Image (cartoon, rainbow, N blue to C red):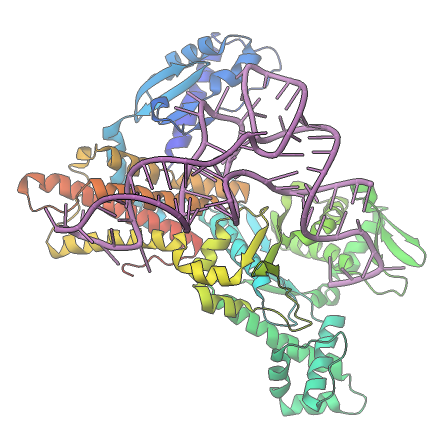
Length: 554
RNA sequence: GCGCCGGUAGCUCAGUGGAUAGAGCGUCGGCCUCCGGAGCCGAAGGUCGCAGGUUCGAAUCCUGUCCGGCGCGCCA
């Protein structure tokens, strides 16, 4: 079902096309039509929806915006649900909705239930979303929180509009970091000092204590590579712990891909060979280079070092081919913005490999600085100085954390004051929203106890109070909010919208008594009960999308 | 020096070329006979960093500039 907004845009577009077909709007040869814009005006006297179609059309058809608006209005007639179309200078087309029609939508929302807000895009795609991807050399820190929550939310939103999403975690399993972890475990176990570039956190001691006897024997056997053996074991154990932490937050991954597998399965070799075949690879100073500067990068990049070892970028090249071979029509990389310098070479590689660059997106999240008393605190797994994600969640809870990270644009840098967050978590707007949901639930419970049932359709036209009308009109926006979030790959508008719903419900609750003992108000009471139920449904759906619980009481 | 991202209320942040720029928190002042006070109402608080430009219309687009963060390796 098309959203109200889509239906109105469609009606105006049809009116425009009809006017063109009948020669009332004269389009110069080869002119391109501007899209029809539709917004919700801030001021009520401008109607419920306003279109700038006439103003946008004016320079194209070379006529006065007001005259164009009149023409559009004539062809538009009165679309379904609209009670009035009026013009405002310099050429706005303002639409006022029919209150009775609005009231009737409550039944639609309730009948769609959990499905309300889920819109299907025209081109459902298979999308691979790679996020978090922290190397398993230690537990996830609060520094990984943003990626985990934002990535999970993005996946939920993409899924809700009909895309098929694979959540992917990519990690390193064989390089120096892993060996260092192995050496650190070895040192801890044998009581030796931990190497300079080893890992000093307490979790290393736990790992050392947990090494199985047979593995320890194998690692310490003469000639054995203790660092590699212990490192592989320890990193897998850490990885399992990461998976557990994420699962505890409701963040689950479909695929865990190791960097090593890209070599074992020859993806890197084949990718680089493909680039070589296309003439984009050359040798210089003993190293193998990719000519990424031909594709917009600042400079060319080394793929194989002069000692023959591959760079991290070589793995990226192989990974691109590996991902596309799995049938994805789109790849999304959710990276911290400190990696933005590597986007250009990856995009260059995608183009050079013959992939459509518009099918690969990098979403770069701005940096999160963790501060305490106004001073930044570092997050170093190596130094063992960090606050783990589990610790943070134990303090402020997953709902508050999800709301916090979910309510900011990914381009916004965050100064996260842990102590402040703890103190203020109880004032997090998320509780206000949950409270509204609990209140709705409470009213519905009281109604059931009193033997009152919400009527599915009859009496809804009684919902003409301003608070009721404002409430319903806002409920109807959920599909648009979700669709926009999915299209923009920017999800923070959802929290704002949900908060607005809760605020409007407070006003409705204040102004419109739902339950009544007065028989004369029985119909109105049932209609308001239906609206309360629809509101509860929308809050539950929105919170569900955000991965936040919607309690019936709190 | 070059590149990317920011600069909007006291603080944290929304704002997709539209009409008189918003929210949360904080501050100040009100509101509990009634469906849940984790609430409601009101007030104060803004030259949207600065200067030009494009446009019927700019916080939004373009140019310049200042400030902040990040990046600029045969590290990951």
